[in-house]
Length: 315
Image (cartoon, rainbow, N blue to C red):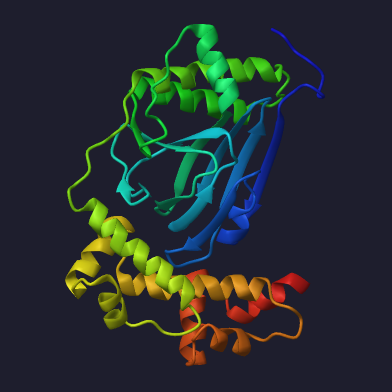
């Protein structure tokens, strides 16, 4: 067994968070923003190991989330959920035997259920190409086009086992390049043999465009209430089609989306508030005029009073 001193060993980091968006910032070099969808106190844990040209992690999130994500440029991310049920990438529902796949520098959206665990691998593209050339392997050239890929169960079990073993190693004394070479071979197998999932219902493109149009509109009008009538006029669809579109793409209704988006924006504002700002001022700025109802909804959603969130920075 080849071992080296700690200078050359993989670098491990374990981080815990009790706010969804704080947790989103803990993953090294990613740009992320998380909205909490399910009610209750949040807990997240991130186990991460940095290898020479690869990032390896396992992420646990206790509440259902809508995640806006972007991994670092010139890289490829593979996400392997411990359980695919209830997770979506870019509005596409994962089925058994599928993994998530996105190139670096590319915005994508995840919707994940409560008590969700996912293994992640990010590899620098030059390192991936060089490894494939050394092994005489021709990679699937379409991996960057589709966010879901079919994967053999034995391949998924092998990769998950390797990641789990690396993250739970007591010493990390084995040289970084050995860990990396083992994981690279598993990754090459995944990208070589399997083909991307391409079967989408005919209605997918239209429904995703409806949802995306609403998102853009809401981002520009978050400081006031937005009605269903406005959204129907904006998207030129009926209330029923609007409902179907959101349920298919995000797994929640348009009304839930509007309410949860505004509550999560208020939470970010409270966490970033200056000393002279108040709960009342922030809540009303974001369009919550009935402060008693706002306080009730906020506590139900996040498991704490808005005043606790505002004052937590000074504790």
